[in-house]
Length: 194
Image 1: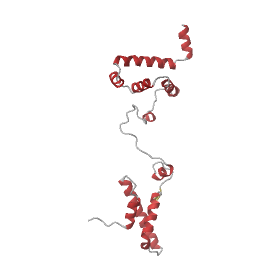
Image 2 (image 1 turned 180 degrees about the vertical axis):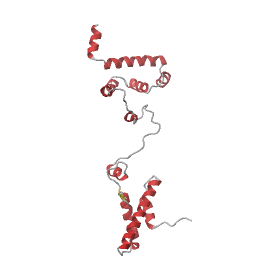
Image 3 (image 1 turned 45 degrees about the horizontal axis):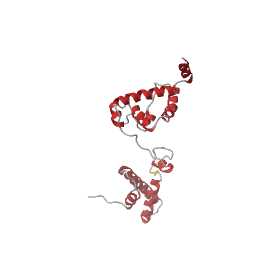
Image 4 (image 1 turned 180 degrees about the horizontal axis):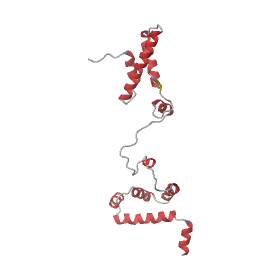
């Protein structure tokens, strides 16, 4: 036998119908009921009959819960996980993608911690790599991007419609061009004079 639904609960369910997560919706409804009961008891202690304005009380409770009020205090407005802070400042918090492989995912660079390469070398690379890529054609940039993901030669050949031998040639050309791009001008001058 289904339990009867109070007017405050019905109002809260309608008020929070926009919440997609059923657990969040139920939490909001339960907070509304808890606040409504607390305020109903408080009004009764003051000698007031809250049953005369149940609808207004239910609406007041729903608005307060929507604004972050809880039975035991308020949500912290500066807590990044607080829905109130997210709503007020216009951002969301979401989980990182499953199966992060450190192979091209947007979040992977931020998650990767390189303790082997010295920091000055990392900085130089992060500046030089995009600058070098801008010297290449769009097709070269696409090929280099897939090569950087450590794809096998036959996969690269099939993807770009070239022979495996050409992929090997391109690897050598890109490597030589990168070495020349990164070479110290003094070293280049010495090689020319030698």
